[in-house]
Length: 376
Ligand SMILES: [Zn+2]
Image 1: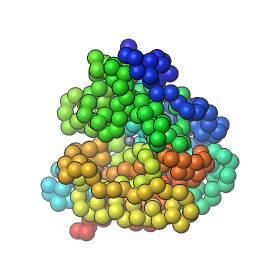
Image 2: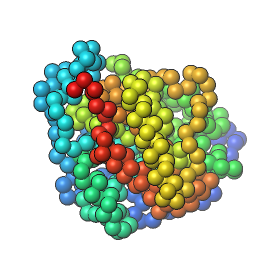
Image 3: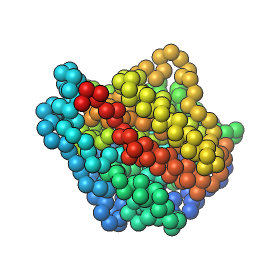
Image 4: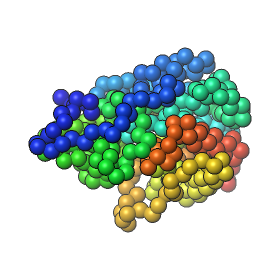
């Protein structure tokens, strides 16, 4: 029986279980990060289609919400990019001609409590439909940009992880000093011997198992799997990965934002196994997004740093899987969660998230997300 964060005892094996230094369930009313409330809000928006695209390992529904007409180009004769590229004709996969609208998708919370990107995307969807964000602030320029797209949101890929720590509604000020242990506990987990698991050692347990861990952090699904490192090439892939890939192959998004949270390094380097022209677009988008936030005067903790080892970043990652499955440009964004109180307000977190999504949307609307095939 998997424990939830709020069900943990105060002492395990003689060791004190880290406690919160403040009430992290207190948030502004517009700060919506619970799967059922997010779904309710999306279903209330006119013109937004909400559907269930699969179930998690724990049996919870995974939903997707879409705005804007679906457009699949004609004369597709290949159902994989690999086959089309094998004959040097990408249109055999993507279809002939150009889409009227770029399709931008955001997949949120592969790590269950990394919900800041989801929150921003929920606001972005609200802006597209109503012209206002959830604080009621008019966002006309963003609305105009967003309405040129088909915009799709999978708010929580790892619903199990989100529900495991459902009372954790924000992380502003965590991850530093005394509450580093609390942050590790909630997000990464607790060994049966009472020790807190920390990042990145948590990645050494794939899957996490109940004989070793008393509490799985919010990082993994109910099968103990960190979904970004799932094996989407094999028959034993997790149901979340299967749902994501099936849906992306149907929708054929031009760009997928994979949303995560850290100190706020924003757009990360491209994954290892995508073509060089896709990597170039990733780098260009990263620079644009970074400067956009800087010019807007929004707090930023740092930029993406070099890897820890020569092997890190060389695995076949979720972003690689998405590219090979549906031909999209994958863009992994690390939204800020308020590490070291930088920034220190929910409104500032939202503003950074909105600026990031809007800048990526603007890039797609101007240039297209996928580099054009020079032979076409
Ligand atoms: Zn993450």
